[in-house]
Amino acid sequence: MTTEKHDHANDTTPVTVIGLGLMGQALAGAFLRGGHPTTVWNRTAAKADALVAEGATLAGSVGDAVAASPLVVVCVTDYDAVHGLLDPVGDALAGRTLVNLTSGTSEGARQTAEWAARQGATYLDGGIMAVPQGIGTADAALVYSGPRAAFDRYEPVLANLGATSTHLGEDHALSALHEMAVVGLMWSIMNGFLQGAAMLSAAGVSASAYAPIATLATTTVNEWLPGYARQIDDDAYPPLDATLDTHLAAMEHMVREAEALGVNTELPAFIKDLAERGVAGGHGGNGYPALIEQFRKPRTT
Ligand code: NAP
Image (cartoon, protein in one colour):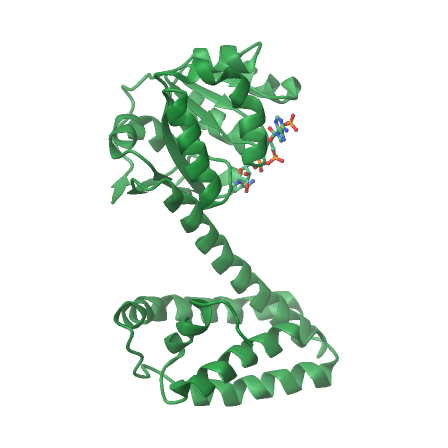
C-alpha cells in the first residue's frame, strides 16, 4: 500500500540518524527541515559539521545516539557496518524502532530483524529509490518492510524523506528484494544505453544526439510494462506487439552490427542467447514476456 505524503508539520518526534555519508547527510537534513529534533553520529565526526550548523545534535557515541530518540535510522555502507556499530549497543535499542536504510540482501534483512527482536527493538527494513539530492523531494520514493504498526506509527516522520512511502508487507525481506529489482532494471537500461552509444560513436554520432531517441525508446517500453506484467502473472504470452521469432531476427542483426563496428558484443550476444533459448523452448510464436521462464530458473546449459 502506498501512502502519499501528508501533513506532518505537527509531528516533532525526535529522530537519530547513524551514518552520515552522502545519503545519511541527506536523510538527517530532511528530518531537520521537517522540524524533528535530530541526533546524528558518524564514524568520521567531521561529516556532521554542516548538520550541526543546521541544528542537529552530534552524539558522543553510538550508544548515546541510540538513546536520544525513539526512532533510530541507520544508513551506512553495508549490513556488516550496521552490525559493527549496533551490536555493541544492542541493549540501548530495547523499546525503540530501528529503520535500516542501508542496502543489502533479503537474507541480511531477515537476520537483522531477528537480531533486533532479540534486543527488544522493533525493526523496519527500508530501501531508498533516490539519490541523495532527491531526498525530501517529489523524486524520492522509499519502501519499507516489517511490522505495519511500526510503519503507521512513524510514517509521518519518514514522509520527510520523499513524496512516496510504501509499506510492502510484514516480511522484512521485501524491501531488499524490491531495491534489487529496481536497481537491476536501472542497470539493464543503462547498459543498453551505453551499448547503443558505443555503436553510434563508431559512426561518429555523439551520445548527446542519441539521448533524445533513447529516451523515446524507454518511454515506449514503460508503456509495455503493465501488459507484460499481466501476461507474466497469467503465464500466458500471446504476442501483443511482435513475436519472439521477430525479435530474434533483429537481435541477429544487432550482433552482426556490433561485430562489424568492432565494439563489445557481450550484451548483444547475451540478449540473443536468451531469445534463442526461449525459441528453443517453444516460444517463437509468443510475445517477449515468455522469456520470464529464462529468468525464473538458473541457467542449466
Ligand atoms: P557513503 O557516502 O560511502 O557513506 C558510507 C557511510 O557508511 C559513511 O557514513 C561511513 O562512515 C559509514 N561506514 C562505512 N563502513 C563503516 C564501518 N565499518 N563502521 C562505521 N561506519 C561505516 O555511502 P552512501 O551513498 O551514503 O550510501 C549509504 C547506503 O545508502 C548504502 O547502503 C547505499 O547503497 C545506500 N543508497 C545510496 C544511494 C546513493 O545514491 N548514494 C541510493 C540508494 C541507496 P565514514 O564517513 O566514517 O566513512
